Length: 464
Image 1 (tube, rainbow, N blue to C red):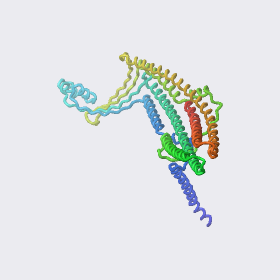
Image 2 (cartoon, rainbow, N blue to C red):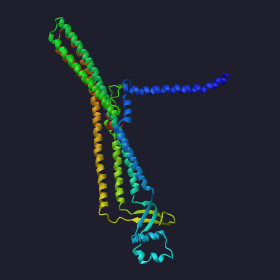
Image 3 (cartoon, rainbow, N blue to C red):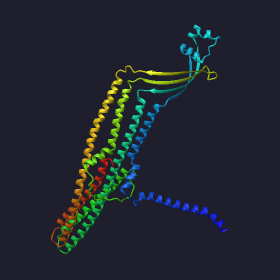
Image 4 (spheres, one colour):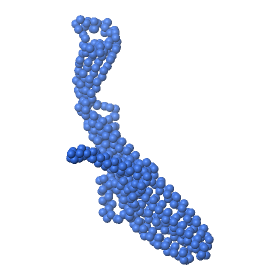
């Protein structure tokens, strides 16, 4: 009895477990979707890339172009298949030629009526002749001078080139996202820096007031401290505004709603020098990986096939066709059937130099593509060289800026102590504070450039 009870309850328990698991999963998913808008969910640079690949509008446009190129490829492939048509034609005419032809197509001539149909009276005035014709036709190109085959190959090459264009756009989008992401982090650091500056300026104001009460400084120090605090608060408001704008721009680059809120979890990092990097190795990688260079090579090959296609217009064309007809004086009660099988060999003797000029234009297009290849090659070499040298420069500048920031912090501490002891003026202290802020800002800027340099090197080498 217990076993039966257990067996009966088992499906219910299993269903309950699945329902509980589904509820938990749904709750977690819904929570994640909610968190993406309330600012509590974090977004790393990798997550920003993932969202951009899904939602960026430029990428969506490029994907539409790729789909269009795929349709063009299918359209070119259709040239290999036969063209099949069906026509239903009704004709009511008193034209002697058409009228007599309809009588012949209907095959209604008999020994009894042949004299009347061949009489001058009928041939000159046939009256209104009705004819219903059904036509079923098949046309199959056999040889078109390579136009169909080469057209299909060119469409395939074009689709591959468009696909490389999509890859290029992806890399540009990712670089734009990386730049916007680190710009937002930089703006966030500016906010934190200005918050600390406001706190420091407030402390200096309190210090100057206390020193003034003790008779160690003049009243102008208190006034100057008030002005400095107000200036710092104004810069803090400006930094917060710039941070919001940077986040809005990042959201636009990613492709998500502009008012989406989240925390930036990645940070500006001091990147160590990569000893394996060299200009030669980066240039070789770029020529091997750059999607725009690959697309150009595909387009050059396409232009080469265009020359062959233009030459094919001087070759004969061979087309086979089959037509099946049904004719009758009424709507197909007693139709007469006939067929026609045709094979046409077409020679282009002279086209007013149109085909010749088309061939020369194709050759000119190919030569133009060769020149573009040389220009793009020089451009890639220059971009790689610039990216590498910029990376090395910013790497060195970051180290220098870090030391400068540490030195400015120490100088500020010493100057503060000297001001407390009455050994220096508030003007000198404010100048030292400004120098520390400038050194800190420069360090953050060099960190920003260094992190962006990493992605720029990947962009110009086609590895992002």
